[in-house]
Length: 115
Length: 111
View 1: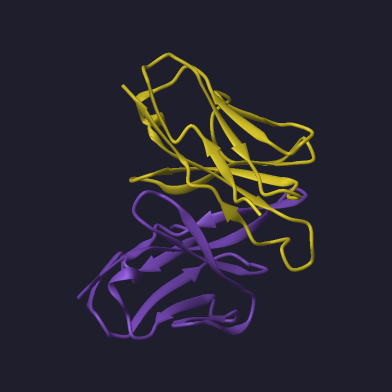
View 2: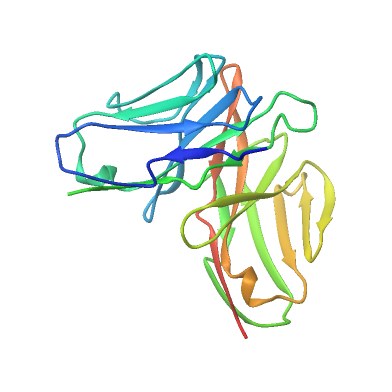
């Protein structure tokens, strides 16, 4: 079974631009969560999608948004990029089975640099 | 005060040493997660536990729900154990849970 796939792995953007990151969950997983990791703040929860609906949201400005498609693939978008948005963005998927429900499987992340 | 506190922040050990990383949390939880992050960013879920102790190879995780404390132990440490270890607790929010993370413990095991 393929793991969680995130694309692209690396991205360089300039301030003011917008960016879209993609996450393909493990086959059969319907929940996808997104996280931001920075040296100063560590890992922080962005949002979670389940069956195309945003189920939970962290404390991030409205510039951060996401969506999930019917095949459970998810995208997150950041508009009007700021220098502070430079971070590693991780997504994780989890299943609905009794044994897998609360275990999150992480992708390798997308490293975003904003210049 | 952070809801999840880890100690130590950095840890250097010699190969073969017994390692302990601690995690304290201030919120009620259903389970606690231990994650491992290698250089390059990839994160692997090591354990999810809600009581007692779990063991996987040389890794042992314990949790004391009453004291709101968990420990991750590594026996006979090896340089390949060098990584950042992160504990995380799920916080109930709305109809689902979100993970809240500790800042991580950077472990370096020297040969």
